[in-house]
Image (cartoon, rainbow, N blue to C red):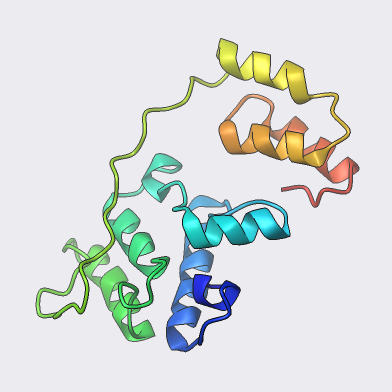
Length: 171
């Protein structure tokens, strides 16, 4: 669901661009760009940016720019047509920047912050301590928080199994 749909505003084809951006993000990273229960998920969609794909998997940062535009909160900053989204991806495959040099924008494109430094190394002290605090929890949200904080952590598979066992959809 796009930010404008969550906020009860008029939806058009650009809402579908947002949905296509979600699917492309999942295709690239193997993860959902936004996680949480209903209210928390909606809040993240409306207010937060996802972790950029190049911070999760080895893809060029140009994909971050395409994802940022497809998932822009402001529909005017989003790709206006599916063809524009597809053309940006084609330009990346051709070794070119994703932006169309002939495009006139109504608003500036969303800014992409540099990827944050890793929170910790896999298996590091912080991860182990966090895992010790949540591993026996009966609340799947605690385990989901571990996955959010340590998406490539040592205990990811175990956390997913525990979430599934607790009926929390396996993240």
